[in-house]
Length: 274
Image (cartoon, rainbow, N blue to C red):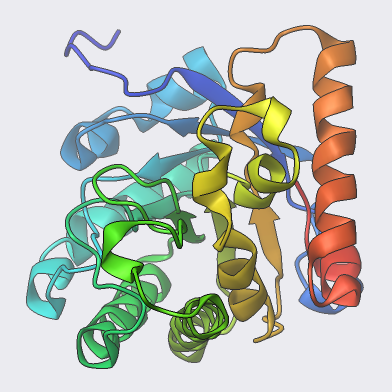
């Protein structure tokens, strides 16, 4: 029995369908149960059997290892313990761990800052290499604006900047980031959360929905790399919803929104999922 107290940021067991195209070479049509929780990596390494046998978890969003500013040396200090988690986890079916990286933590450089974004892109390449070398399934990119607005062109830092230039830069950052990730780990799996386009194009589905206007440009930049295993969209709109009919309605609207507004519709259809 686990006796260590754990403070959960989110007690949500998200059922994510990792269904990829035939060419992925690792098609899995059964759901995976992932836990989004604040759990110390050392404690996780010691408690893998509990999470598998008592809770039924297949993987974690691990959020205490990598940030977009984390140096390479600091990242790779965690290589041994992360490798242990994945090696032991595979024996118990806890084989779908993701390094969660939140763009909204800290003070992300503005989209026009080429010099500082070059460092962010390089850091994502390092995170991807860590995932590959440790046996981690992939990276979960959290796009929520926790400390500063990310996708709202109306904010003070972007006053006087043309919207088309902003869109182009957001697209470029998404593309460059994804290219660095896949160059380091071609077989990596990517989750992005939440679905910002869902809120921008369906303003009745949330609050402050205007703040997501440029999110679709970031997605389109990432998707333009056409990575091997596609992108899984983790829809947060269902967090407090338990009624199956309501969940299906949200799912259908998420699908409709992405199908209508993504730039590469074939990539979405053939390689991506919710």
